[in-house]
Image 1 (cartoon, one colour):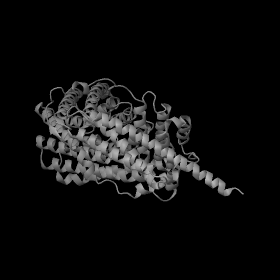
Image 2: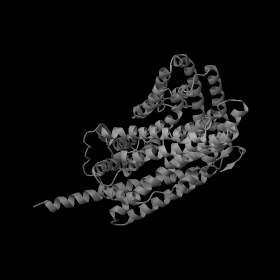
Image 3: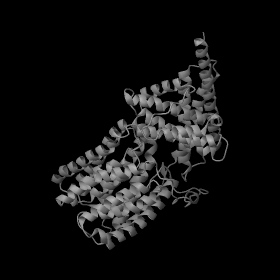
Image 4: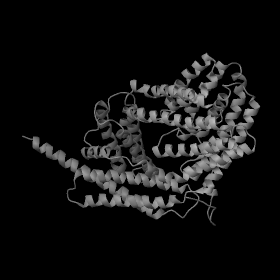
Length: 562
């Protein structure tokens, strides 16, 4: 990590393409869940405050209510813990902001604290994989709280409002468990099956097979992480076992795509929709050994948080520097809400510079379109506070419904919603709000992106080399077991799982490093050779497990003959 200028021959321009940046994707399968949860969590507190004539307190209840946007991809046992941590994290950020606001009104100090909070929130969310929506919601609320006049005596009451709304958001997030208690894990398994089927369609050699293979292994890894979050005992453990067999089938298809049946995989994925019976797959090569491997992984402690924080240092520095400079620039221009520029910068930072550039373009386009929408809605919102609240709820739903198609499309609704929320404490002049938001958007995007260019991630290339080394060692270990005449099934399966995880991590590390503009050339030849050899070894383990499963089946058949 360093601050540097480009070396001769370094091409920054090739990372700044506009191709596909504004293109629309298929919506998420569960796009309606965050959208409905958001409305259900935000509406009651806001309507209660409206009835009491205290909409000026809505910012504090919004802090808790917006926690309902998180953890929709987690099984409910894990979701309960994650949502609780999100609420505590949100309240912690708000508490720091309110205490700071009560101690000083110096705008430079407030921006500095906001930038440090944004960096901490970004780093912790990335390290713990809390998202979507990640750190942006946390930063939006804590940054806004910094610029609200506050006395120390008011802080406990304001935090209590946030905690009450957060408790309600927790209930909203957990409520679907009453209807479909195994929904998240069934959905993750179906995604793994569909991804494996897409790779099987290529037979391992057709057009796009490399991308399909990477997507398949990523989906399978995500499915295992979801299943590993389930309890080891009780009815959920029974469901987990049934789903594990399906994930094993997806892994088998990825390792031997030419022998897979894509339509059968898709049929199983379709059968997982709703609450019907989980399909049975029949004999799965190595399935018993795979489930032993799962039990082993369940017993293994997770990697310590400090180890996950280390690689995120460049992103943390980019966030702190970019947010601070964006806020200072806004102050220098005389804008009354510098936290808008700060939040814009915080929303940009992704895994690498290329993705950060894409997000900057999306943010600017979405915010400018959203400002136009606000200009159209403002006269309607000024007809009454009840209409103002209803418009915010509609925009809240629209933002979550559209953001999975593309970030800019969701921003079209987020921007007018944020502007209307500022009017909860009293109507303001639309022209002034529009001008400040446009300026802050442009300042935040420009300064924030320049900070990403200046703060380089020179460790990215070395991490690729480390990931190649890990993959090579995992492959060699699996190959040594394959060379034995009769390797222990559980040991072979554990080696296969370790190799699959290493190859998935290698691909993610390479993709992240390829998006940076500074540093030496990546060891592309080593990466290609490591991936090719690794996937050949994975296929060999599947063939060995299939042969063993067939031999065991024949033995059992012979044993029962009269």
